[in-house]
Each structure stands twice: as C-alpha cells, then as structure tokens.
Image (cartoon, rainbow, N blue to C red; front, side, top):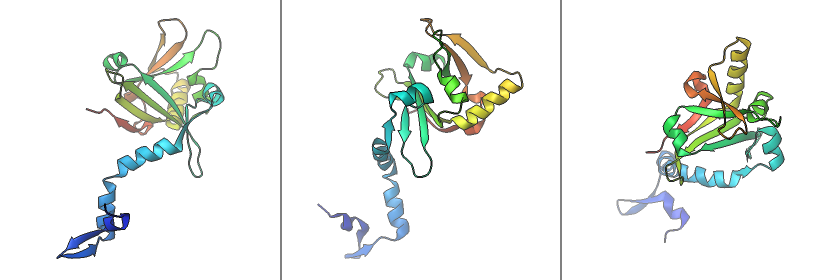
Length: 182
C-alpha cells in the first residue's frame, strides 16, 4: 500500500514526478463530495429539543463566525407524487402552541432543508435547502401588499393547519441547493 506522500507522485519517463498544484487540485476535487459527507457527519449536530420547540431549529451547523440554524422537514413519497413543487410549513395548532411559520417569521432559523422520501423510504426522491431570510422577506412583503400566493390547509387528523407554498412563487435565490436523484 502506498503512503499518503506517494499519492502526489506519478511516474514520468520511469522517474517519479511531483504533480503540479493544478493536477493535485483536479485529482482531489474528485473526492470533494465524499469529504463533504464526512464533514457533515461531524460538523452538523441535532439541536436540543428546546431549540426545536422554540427556535425552528432541528440541526445546528458548527461554523466560524456565523451560526447556521437549519429546520428540517421530510415528507413521505406519496406527497412527492402529488405535490413535487410545493413545500408546507405548519401555521396553526388548536392548542395555541407556537408553529414553524410563526418561529420563522419571528426570525428563528437561517435555512430550511425540505425533502421527500423515496418510494422505499431509504433515500430522498427530492430535496432542497432554502434560505429563510429570503423567505421571510418575501412572505412579509406578500402580507404587506395584501397578497397570499399560498394555500392554507388542515391536516387530515385536525392536529394543525399548514401553509403550502409553490417553490416557483418565491424569489429564485430562495433555493440555494436542490436535488432529484435519478
């Protein structure tokens, strides 16, 4: 097995030749996705229950200088089949408990991870990461202008109401990353 120092050398005319910076960068870029997965496993942690309940935060991303707070919602595959370009945010509970929409409007959370499970529920069929600062600005502007380009629905069990938003109705910069694996 080669040592890690051998990885920066290749044979050129029978003699080892050190890779240039650009060659090494191109080679290592092929591993970036794997590195990001590993970093995510170690730099993203689940938020304490109190932060979930009061601050719209399911996960915390440890960063230098800026604390990112990510709310997360995963829906079942049957919703993906019916509503692939919508996302929902709970907006009312009969108990009066604070909802995700209220917490977002109050300024809690920096991002939203929203996804739909695959048919076998072992992976994601579709997902996006949304910038909640963009959402807040758009939402309050719509309210101020007397517009409501969203639907308000009841959960089937009567436990809450939710707003359904069309992703295409929000500014493009709302979605900062998305995926629909094949």
